[in-house]
Length: 177
Image (cartoon, rainbow, N blue to C red; front, side, top):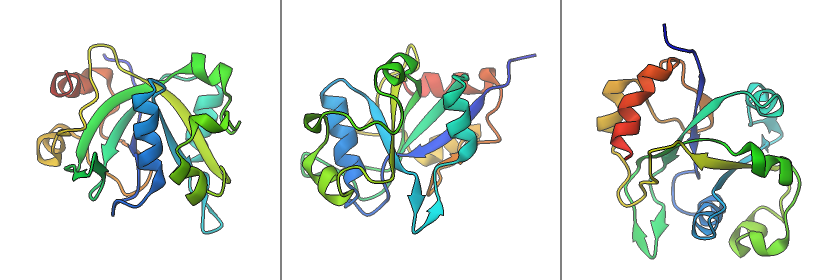
């Protein structure tokens, strides 16, 4: 029997193309400091799952399916929505930059700093790609190629209950080589 693992779907930014988290993700990618950011609260309600925070604190094995949402642009061109990466927490970077700790200002994209009022209520998670996979932004893996294998996109961070066995993730590693 294969080992059970927690899998989370992470939209890199909200759809529509104006979420500064996208610009921050691209800046991190270009600077070789891959990470995603997420609101801890949204409109006064918890947004970042407590279970995920606890698992990160406890340094559990976690897999993130990074999702591109519609409307994002790269170098002025719209990019298609889909699955762009399989990643895991970079615990070495989390040791250096604990979750919730602000980094030096040059780390942040100016649009992110302005839109997020400096860093208020944002959680930054350093990540690294799963061995043998690449980041697929242009193009991402379309949803119709992913859904038959158990992954579906989400509008917010959510646990993927279908993909729970490490062996079930193998097909996605192949798609993201």
